[in-house]
Image 1 (cartoon, rainbow, N blue to C red):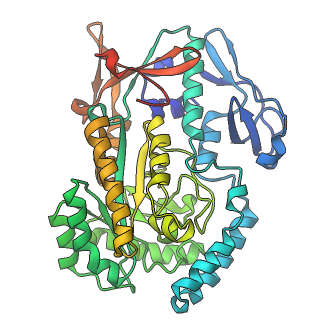
Image 2 (tube, rainbow, N blue to C red):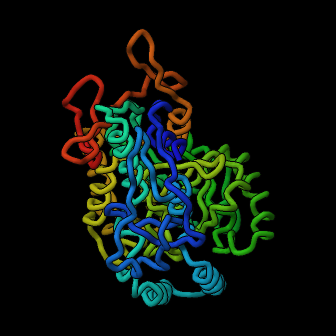
Image 3 (cartoon, rainbow, N blue to C red):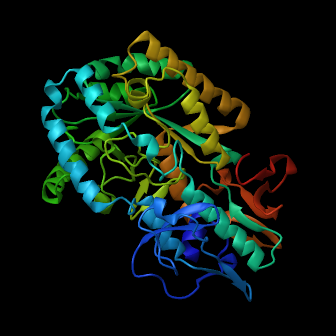
Length: 452
Protein backbone atom coordinates (compact mmCIF):
# COMPACT_ATOMS: atom_id res chain seq x y z
CA UNK A 1 0.00 0.00 0.00
CA UNK A 2 2.80 2.39 0.88
CA UNK A 3 4.52 1.74 -2.45
CA UNK A 4 1.43 2.86 -4.40
CA UNK A 5 1.21 6.14 -2.48
CA UNK A 6 4.95 6.74 -2.79
CA UNK A 7 4.79 6.15 -6.54
CA UNK A 8 2.02 8.72 -6.86
CA UNK A 9 3.67 11.46 -4.78
CA UNK A 10 7.35 10.42 -4.78
CA UNK A 11 7.94 11.21 -1.10
CA UNK A 12 10.72 9.65 1.06
CA UNK A 13 9.95 6.10 2.11
CA UNK A 14 10.22 6.75 5.83
CA UNK A 15 6.94 8.66 5.65
CA UNK A 16 5.07 5.61 4.29
CA UNK A 17 3.27 4.18 7.30
CA UNK A 18 0.01 2.78 5.98
CA UNK A 19 -1.26 -0.64 7.02
CA UNK A 20 -4.26 -2.86 6.38
CA UNK A 21 -6.75 -2.96 9.26
CA UNK A 22 -7.83 -6.60 9.31
CA UNK A 23 -9.33 -9.14 6.84
CA UNK A 24 -11.26 -8.04 3.76
CA UNK A 25 -14.49 -9.20 2.16
CA UNK A 26 -14.38 -12.16 -0.23
CA UNK A 27 -16.33 -10.26 -2.88
CA UNK A 28 -15.53 -7.00 -4.61
CA UNK A 29 -18.01 -4.18 -4.84
CA UNK A 30 -18.70 -0.54 -4.12
CA UNK A 31 -18.19 1.23 -0.81
CA UNK A 32 -17.70 4.74 0.49
CA UNK A 33 -14.55 6.24 1.92
CA UNK A 34 -14.98 9.83 2.97
CA UNK A 35 -16.83 11.49 0.10
CA UNK A 36 -15.57 8.99 -2.47
CA UNK A 37 -17.23 5.95 -4.00
CA UNK A 38 -14.61 3.19 -4.33
CA UNK A 39 -14.58 -0.32 -5.78
CA UNK A 40 -12.84 -3.41 -4.44
CA UNK A 41 -12.69 -5.44 -1.27
CA UNK A 42 -13.33 -3.82 2.10
CA UNK A 43 -13.81 -4.95 5.70
CA UNK A 44 -17.61 -4.74 5.51
CA UNK A 45 -19.68 -6.30 2.74
CA UNK A 46 -19.55 -4.01 -0.32
CA UNK A 47 -22.56 -3.14 -2.49
CA UNK A 48 -23.09 -4.68 -5.92
CA UNK A 49 -23.64 -1.26 -7.55
CA UNK A 50 -23.20 2.42 -6.66
CA UNK A 51 -26.98 2.63 -6.32
CA UNK A 52 -26.83 -0.01 -3.59
CA UNK A 53 -24.82 2.17 -1.23
CA UNK A 54 -27.90 4.02 0.00
CA UNK A 55 -27.27 5.42 3.47
CA UNK A 56 -24.44 3.06 4.30
CA UNK A 57 -21.78 4.49 6.56
CA UNK A 58 -18.46 5.24 4.95
CA UNK A 59 -15.55 2.89 5.67
CA UNK A 60 -13.48 4.33 8.51
CA UNK A 61 -9.69 4.49 8.90
CA UNK A 62 -7.99 4.59 12.27
CA UNK A 63 -4.67 5.89 13.58
CA UNK A 64 -2.56 4.15 16.20
CA UNK A 65 1.11 4.47 17.22
CA UNK A 66 1.99 6.59 14.21
CA UNK A 67 0.41 4.22 11.68
CA UNK A 68 -2.68 4.91 9.55
CA UNK A 69 -4.81 1.78 9.21
CA UNK A 70 -7.13 1.47 6.19
CA UNK A 71 -10.16 -0.85 5.92
CA UNK A 72 -9.10 -1.73 2.36
CA UNK A 73 -5.92 -2.26 0.37
CA UNK A 74 -4.96 1.05 -1.25
CA UNK A 75 -2.99 -0.67 -4.01
CA UNK A 76 -5.77 -3.10 -4.84
CA UNK A 77 -8.51 -0.46 -4.89
CA UNK A 78 -6.55 2.08 -6.93
CA UNK A 79 -5.65 -0.63 -9.48
CA UNK A 80 -9.26 -1.84 -9.65
CA UNK A 81 -10.35 1.68 -10.52
CA UNK A 82 -7.54 2.52 -12.93
CA UNK A 83 -7.88 -0.79 -14.75
CA UNK A 84 -11.71 -0.64 -14.84
CA UNK A 85 -12.34 -3.83 -12.88
CA UNK A 86 -15.70 -2.42 -11.82
CA UNK A 87 -17.11 -2.84 -15.34
CA UNK A 88 -19.48 -5.81 -15.38
CA UNK A 89 -18.05 -8.74 -17.35
CA UNK A 90 -21.37 -9.61 -18.98
CA UNK A 91 -21.84 -6.00 -20.06
CA UNK A 92 -18.32 -5.96 -21.49
CA UNK A 93 -18.96 -9.12 -23.55
CA UNK A 94 -22.35 -7.87 -24.76
CA UNK A 95 -20.89 -4.54 -25.84
CA UNK A 96 -18.05 -6.33 -27.60
CA UNK A 97 -20.54 -8.38 -29.65
CA UNK A 98 -22.61 -5.30 -30.49
CA UNK A 99 -19.54 -3.31 -31.47
CA UNK A 100 -18.26 -6.14 -33.69
CA UNK A 101 -21.59 -6.24 -35.51
CA UNK A 102 -21.64 -2.45 -35.86
CA UNK A 103 -18.13 -2.28 -37.31
CA UNK A 104 -18.97 -5.03 -39.77
CA UNK A 105 -21.57 -2.81 -41.46
CA UNK A 106 -20.10 0.61 -40.55
CA UNK A 107 -18.32 1.15 -43.89
CA UNK A 108 -21.64 1.14 -45.77
CA UNK A 109 -23.55 3.31 -43.28
CA UNK A 110 -24.07 7.01 -44.05
CA UNK A 111 -22.86 9.39 -41.32
CA UNK A 112 -26.46 10.39 -40.51
CA UNK A 113 -27.38 6.74 -39.87
CA UNK A 114 -24.29 6.19 -37.72
CA UNK A 115 -25.12 9.24 -35.61
CA UNK A 116 -28.70 8.02 -35.16
CA UNK A 117 -27.55 4.56 -34.00
CA UNK A 118 -25.00 6.09 -31.63
CA UNK A 119 -27.65 8.39 -30.15
CA UNK A 120 -29.93 5.40 -29.47
CA UNK A 121 -27.17 3.45 -27.74
CA UNK A 122 -26.13 6.40 -25.59
CA UNK A 123 -29.59 7.69 -24.70
CA UNK A 124 -29.34 6.77 -20.99
CA UNK A 125 -25.81 7.97 -20.38
CA UNK A 126 -26.82 10.77 -18.01
CA UNK A 127 -28.21 8.20 -15.55
CA UNK A 128 -24.83 6.56 -15.02
CA UNK A 129 -23.66 7.17 -11.44
CA UNK A 130 -20.08 6.00 -11.77
CA UNK A 131 -17.53 7.12 -12.89
CA UNK A 132 -18.35 10.81 -12.36
CA UNK A 133 -19.07 12.98 -15.39
CA UNK A 134 -17.46 15.05 -16.89
CA UNK A 135 -14.15 14.24 -15.12
CA UNK A 136 -13.61 11.51 -12.56
CA UNK A 137 -10.91 12.20 -9.95
CA UNK A 138 -11.64 9.34 -7.56
CA UNK A 139 -8.10 7.89 -7.53
CA UNK A 140 -6.55 11.33 -7.11
CA UNK A 141 -8.87 12.20 -4.22
CA UNK A 142 -8.11 8.83 -2.63
CA UNK A 143 -4.36 9.46 -2.80
CA UNK A 144 -4.81 12.86 -1.19
CA UNK A 145 -6.91 11.38 1.62
CA UNK A 146 -4.25 8.72 2.26
CA UNK A 147 -1.47 11.31 2.41
CA UNK A 148 -3.55 13.43 4.78
CA UNK A 149 -3.91 10.39 7.05
CA UNK A 150 -0.12 9.96 7.06
CA UNK A 151 0.33 13.56 8.14
CA UNK A 152 -2.08 13.05 11.02
CA UNK A 153 -0.70 9.66 12.02
CA UNK A 154 2.84 10.99 12.27
CA UNK A 155 1.75 14.32 13.71
CA UNK A 156 3.91 15.79 10.97
CA UNK A 157 3.93 19.42 9.98
CA UNK A 158 4.70 18.54 6.37
CA UNK A 159 5.76 15.75 4.02
CA UNK A 160 8.07 16.63 1.11
CA UNK A 161 7.40 15.14 -2.32
CA UNK A 162 8.54 15.59 -5.91
CA UNK A 163 6.20 17.97 -7.73
CA UNK A 164 4.16 16.35 -10.48
CA UNK A 165 5.48 18.30 -13.49
CA UNK A 166 8.76 19.85 -14.61
CA UNK A 167 9.69 23.49 -13.98
CA UNK A 168 6.90 23.96 -11.43
CA UNK A 169 4.24 23.58 -14.12
CA UNK A 170 0.80 23.73 -12.53
CA UNK A 171 -0.61 21.03 -14.86
CA UNK A 172 0.18 19.43 -18.20
CA UNK A 173 -1.65 19.21 -21.54
CA UNK A 174 -1.19 17.13 -24.68
CA UNK A 175 -2.91 17.57 -28.03
CA UNK A 176 -3.41 14.37 -30.02
CA UNK A 177 -4.79 13.89 -33.54
CA UNK A 178 -6.26 10.54 -34.60
CA UNK A 179 -6.03 10.32 -38.40
CA UNK A 180 -8.87 8.06 -39.56
CA UNK A 181 -9.39 8.67 -43.29
CA UNK A 182 -7.60 9.76 -46.44
CA UNK A 183 -9.27 13.16 -46.12
CA UNK A 184 -7.96 13.44 -42.58
CA UNK A 185 -4.47 12.48 -43.66
CA UNK A 186 -4.54 15.09 -46.40
CA UNK A 187 -5.66 17.77 -43.93
CA UNK A 188 -2.74 17.11 -41.58
CA UNK A 189 -0.44 19.80 -43.09
CA UNK A 190 -3.16 22.42 -42.58
CA UNK A 191 -3.75 21.17 -39.04
CA UNK A 192 -0.05 21.49 -38.27
CA UNK A 193 -0.19 25.07 -39.55
CA UNK A 194 -3.04 25.81 -37.13
CA UNK A 195 -1.23 24.21 -34.19
CA UNK A 196 1.99 26.06 -34.97
CA UNK A 197 0.18 29.39 -35.06
CA UNK A 198 -0.62 28.88 -31.36
CA UNK A 199 2.71 27.26 -30.48
CA UNK A 200 0.96 23.99 -29.55
CA UNK A 201 2.85 20.72 -30.19
CA UNK A 202 0.87 17.55 -30.93
CA UNK A 203 1.01 13.89 -31.84
CA UNK A 204 -0.54 12.33 -34.93
CA UNK A 205 -1.97 8.82 -34.43
CA UNK A 206 -1.49 7.08 -37.79
CA UNK A 207 -3.33 3.89 -38.84
CA UNK A 208 -0.77 1.57 -40.51
CA UNK A 209 -3.03 -0.59 -42.69
CA UNK A 210 -6.07 -0.41 -44.99
CA UNK A 211 -7.44 3.04 -44.22
CA UNK A 212 -5.03 5.09 -46.36
CA UNK A 213 -1.51 4.95 -47.76
CA UNK A 214 1.18 5.72 -45.19
CA UNK A 215 4.38 6.85 -46.88
CA UNK A 216 7.73 7.66 -45.37
CA UNK A 217 7.35 11.15 -46.79
CA UNK A 218 4.09 11.64 -44.86
CA UNK A 219 5.64 10.47 -41.58
CA UNK A 220 8.74 12.61 -42.15
CA UNK A 221 6.56 15.66 -42.82
CA UNK A 222 5.11 15.26 -39.31
CA UNK A 223 8.41 14.74 -37.55
CA UNK A 224 10.25 17.51 -39.45
CA UNK A 225 7.88 20.06 -37.99
CA UNK A 226 8.42 18.90 -34.41
CA UNK A 227 5.28 16.80 -34.10
CA UNK A 228 5.14 13.19 -32.97
CA UNK A 229 4.05 10.01 -34.80
CA UNK A 230 2.05 7.42 -32.82
CA UNK A 231 0.78 4.04 -34.03
CA UNK A 232 -3.02 4.01 -34.09
CA UNK A 233 -4.34 0.44 -33.94
CA UNK A 234 -3.67 -1.78 -36.97
CA UNK A 235 -6.59 -1.11 -39.31
CA UNK A 236 -9.14 0.57 -36.98
CA UNK A 237 -11.85 -2.05 -37.59
CA UNK A 238 -12.97 -2.16 -33.96
CA UNK A 239 -11.88 -5.77 -33.42
CA UNK A 240 -8.39 -5.47 -31.95
CA UNK A 241 -9.45 -6.63 -28.47
CA UNK A 242 -12.33 -8.90 -29.47
CA UNK A 243 -10.31 -12.14 -29.26
CA UNK A 244 -7.00 -12.85 -27.49
CA UNK A 245 -5.63 -15.12 -30.23
CA UNK A 246 -6.43 -12.61 -32.96
CA UNK A 247 -5.09 -9.81 -30.77
CA UNK A 248 -1.71 -11.53 -30.50
CA UNK A 249 -1.52 -11.94 -34.27
CA UNK A 250 -2.26 -8.28 -34.80
CA UNK A 251 0.08 -7.11 -32.06
CA UNK A 252 3.05 -8.67 -33.83
CA UNK A 253 2.33 -6.42 -36.83
CA UNK A 254 1.53 -3.41 -34.65
CA UNK A 255 4.84 -3.73 -32.82
CA UNK A 256 6.66 -4.00 -36.15
CA UNK A 257 5.00 -0.78 -37.33
CA UNK A 258 6.07 0.88 -34.09
CA UNK A 259 9.71 0.14 -34.93
CA UNK A 260 9.24 1.14 -38.57
CA UNK A 261 7.58 4.44 -37.63
CA UNK A 262 10.03 5.14 -34.80
CA UNK A 263 7.02 5.46 -32.48
CA UNK A 264 7.15 5.04 -28.71
CA UNK A 265 3.37 5.48 -28.26
CA UNK A 266 0.23 3.53 -29.16
CA UNK A 267 -3.50 4.20 -29.23
CA UNK A 268 -6.22 1.66 -29.97
CA UNK A 269 -8.98 2.44 -32.44
CA UNK A 270 -12.20 3.82 -30.91
CA UNK A 271 -10.46 3.61 -27.51
CA UNK A 272 -11.30 -0.10 -27.27
CA UNK A 273 -9.04 -1.65 -24.68
CA UNK A 274 -8.22 -4.51 -22.34
CA UNK A 275 -5.51 -3.35 -19.98
CA UNK A 276 -4.73 -6.94 -18.99
CA UNK A 277 -3.32 -7.47 -22.50
CA UNK A 278 -1.20 -4.33 -22.66
CA UNK A 279 1.98 -6.19 -21.79
CA UNK A 280 2.04 -7.59 -25.35
CA UNK A 281 2.39 -4.09 -26.81
CA UNK A 282 6.02 -3.14 -27.36
CA UNK A 283 5.62 0.58 -26.71
CA UNK A 284 6.63 2.88 -23.87
CA UNK A 285 3.21 4.44 -23.47
CA UNK A 286 -0.42 3.95 -24.39
CA UNK A 287 -3.23 6.49 -24.60
CA UNK A 288 -6.38 4.42 -25.07
CA UNK A 289 -8.06 4.63 -21.67
CA UNK A 290 -10.67 7.37 -21.11
CA UNK A 291 -10.97 9.03 -17.73
CA UNK A 292 -14.74 8.56 -17.88
CA UNK A 293 -16.27 6.77 -20.86
CA UNK A 294 -20.02 7.41 -20.63
CA UNK A 295 -20.13 8.55 -24.27
CA UNK A 296 -17.63 6.10 -25.72
CA UNK A 297 -18.48 2.79 -27.43
CA UNK A 298 -16.74 0.95 -24.56
CA UNK A 299 -17.82 2.31 -21.21
CA UNK A 300 -15.76 2.48 -18.06
CA UNK A 301 -12.93 4.86 -17.27
CA UNK A 302 -9.73 4.90 -15.23
CA UNK A 303 -10.97 7.46 -12.64
CA UNK A 304 -7.71 9.44 -12.56
CA UNK A 305 -6.30 12.54 -14.27
CA UNK A 306 -2.69 11.42 -13.75
CA UNK A 307 -0.50 9.06 -15.81
CA UNK A 308 -0.11 5.60 -14.30
CA UNK A 309 1.82 2.44 -15.08
CA UNK A 310 0.20 -0.76 -16.35
CA UNK A 311 3.14 -3.11 -15.97
CA UNK A 312 5.94 -1.66 -18.11
CA UNK A 313 3.53 0.54 -20.07
CA UNK A 314 2.75 4.10 -19.03
CA UNK A 315 -0.89 5.03 -19.54
CA UNK A 316 -1.69 8.62 -20.50
CA UNK A 317 -5.46 8.69 -19.93
CA UNK A 318 -7.75 10.58 -22.29
CA UNK A 319 -9.19 13.13 -19.89
CA UNK A 320 -11.23 15.38 -22.18
CA UNK A 321 -14.20 14.76 -24.48
CA UNK A 322 -13.34 13.96 -28.09
CA UNK A 323 -14.29 16.41 -30.84
CA UNK A 324 -16.56 13.88 -32.59
CA UNK A 325 -18.47 13.29 -29.36
CA UNK A 326 -18.77 17.01 -28.67
CA UNK A 327 -19.96 17.93 -32.15
CA UNK A 328 -21.99 14.92 -33.26
CA UNK A 329 -23.25 13.28 -30.07
CA UNK A 330 -23.74 16.27 -27.78
CA UNK A 331 -24.35 18.68 -30.67
CA UNK A 332 -22.22 21.23 -28.86
CA UNK A 333 -20.17 23.66 -30.93
CA UNK A 334 -18.63 25.58 -28.06
CA UNK A 335 -15.66 25.17 -25.73
CA UNK A 336 -17.76 25.27 -22.55
CA UNK A 337 -17.50 21.54 -21.76
CA UNK A 338 -13.77 21.55 -22.47
CA UNK A 339 -13.35 24.56 -20.18
CA UNK A 340 -15.25 22.82 -17.41
CA UNK A 341 -13.07 19.74 -17.81
CA UNK A 342 -9.81 21.71 -17.83
CA UNK A 343 -10.87 23.43 -14.60
CA UNK A 344 -11.57 20.09 -12.86
CA UNK A 345 -8.31 18.58 -14.11
CA UNK A 346 -6.22 21.57 -13.08
CA UNK A 347 -7.67 21.43 -9.56
CA UNK A 348 -5.76 18.14 -9.23
CA UNK A 349 -2.75 19.37 -11.25
CA UNK A 350 -3.51 16.61 -13.76
CA UNK A 351 -3.01 15.89 -17.44
CA UNK A 352 -5.33 17.41 -20.02
CA UNK A 353 -5.31 14.90 -22.89
CA UNK A 354 -7.36 15.97 -25.92
CA UNK A 355 -8.29 14.02 -29.06
CA UNK A 356 -9.01 16.12 -32.14
CA UNK A 357 -9.50 14.34 -35.48
CA UNK A 358 -8.29 16.07 -38.64
CA UNK A 359 -11.22 14.25 -40.29
CA UNK A 360 -13.86 16.15 -38.26
CA UNK A 361 -12.56 19.73 -38.15
CA UNK A 362 -12.26 20.50 -41.85
CA UNK A 363 -15.46 22.57 -41.66
CA UNK A 364 -15.21 26.25 -40.76
CA UNK A 365 -17.54 25.92 -37.75
CA UNK A 366 -15.61 23.04 -36.22
CA UNK A 367 -12.27 24.67 -36.97
CA UNK A 368 -13.22 27.85 -35.13
CA UNK A 369 -14.15 25.82 -32.04
CA UNK A 370 -10.80 24.05 -32.19
CA UNK A 371 -8.91 27.31 -32.59
CA UNK A 372 -10.78 28.69 -29.56
CA UNK A 373 -9.58 25.66 -27.57
CA UNK A 374 -6.00 26.23 -28.69
CA UNK A 375 -6.20 29.89 -27.67
CA UNK A 376 -7.58 28.85 -24.28
CA UNK A 377 -4.74 26.36 -23.69
CA UNK A 378 -2.13 28.86 -24.88
CA UNK A 379 -3.46 31.38 -22.35
CA UNK A 380 -3.15 28.76 -19.60
CA UNK A 381 0.42 28.09 -20.70
CA UNK A 382 1.33 31.77 -20.56
CA UNK A 383 -0.61 32.81 -17.44
CA UNK A 384 -0.92 29.64 -15.33
CA UNK A 385 2.29 27.84 -16.25
CA UNK A 386 0.59 24.83 -17.84
CA UNK A 387 3.14 22.59 -19.55
CA UNK A 388 1.97 21.82 -23.10
CA UNK A 389 4.03 18.97 -24.51
CA UNK A 390 3.86 15.99 -26.82
CA UNK A 391 2.76 12.67 -25.28
CA UNK A 392 6.30 11.38 -25.77
CA UNK A 393 7.70 14.24 -23.69
CA UNK A 394 5.18 13.54 -20.91
CA UNK A 395 6.13 9.86 -21.04
CA UNK A 396 9.84 10.66 -20.69
CA UNK A 397 9.22 13.04 -17.79
CA UNK A 398 6.92 10.68 -15.88
CA UNK A 399 9.40 7.83 -16.23
CA UNK A 400 12.23 10.06 -15.01
CA UNK A 401 10.13 11.24 -12.07
CA UNK A 402 9.36 7.61 -11.17
CA UNK A 403 13.11 7.02 -10.70
CA UNK A 404 13.88 10.22 -8.79
CA UNK A 405 14.35 10.33 -5.04
CA UNK A 406 14.44 12.99 -2.37
CA UNK A 407 17.65 12.68 -0.39
CA UNK A 408 18.94 14.56 2.63
CA UNK A 409 22.37 16.11 2.33
CA UNK A 410 24.03 18.36 4.91
CA UNK A 411 20.72 19.05 6.60
CA UNK A 412 18.83 20.00 3.44
CA UNK A 413 16.80 18.12 0.86
CA UNK A 414 17.55 17.66 -2.80
CA UNK A 415 16.28 15.51 -5.67
CA UNK A 416 18.57 12.89 -7.21
CA UNK A 417 18.14 11.17 -10.56
CA UNK A 418 18.08 11.95 -14.28
CA UNK A 419 15.98 14.99 -15.04
CA UNK A 420 16.20 16.33 -11.50
CA UNK A 421 17.38 19.72 -12.81
CA UNK A 422 13.76 20.33 -13.89
CA UNK A 423 12.18 18.80 -10.79
CA UNK A 424 11.04 20.60 -7.65
CA UNK A 425 10.37 19.66 -4.05
CA UNK A 426 6.88 20.52 -2.81
CA UNK A 427 5.46 20.10 0.69
CA UNK A 428 2.12 18.57 1.63
CA UNK A 429 0.60 20.05 4.77
CA UNK A 430 -2.83 20.15 6.40
CA UNK A 431 -4.81 23.34 6.70
CA UNK A 432 -8.41 23.49 7.84
CA UNK A 433 -8.79 19.74 7.46
CA UNK A 434 -7.62 19.78 3.84
CA UNK A 435 -4.40 18.82 2.12
CA UNK A 436 -2.37 21.84 0.99
CA UNK A 437 0.66 21.92 -1.32
CA UNK A 438 3.45 24.44 -0.77
CA UNK A 439 6.40 25.33 -2.94
CA UNK A 440 9.84 25.04 -1.42
CA UNK A 441 11.05 28.55 -2.02
CA UNK A 442 7.97 30.77 -2.02
CA UNK A 443 4.59 30.94 -0.32
CA UNK A 444 3.36 32.55 -3.52
CA UNK A 445 2.92 29.06 -4.93
CA UNK A 446 1.03 27.80 -1.88
CA UNK A 447 -2.08 25.99 -3.02
CA UNK A 448 -4.83 23.67 -1.86
CA UNK A 449 -4.52 20.14 -3.20
CA UNK A 450 -7.46 21.04 -5.41
CA UNK A 451 -5.74 23.76 -7.38
CA UNK A 452 -2.78 26.04 -7.95
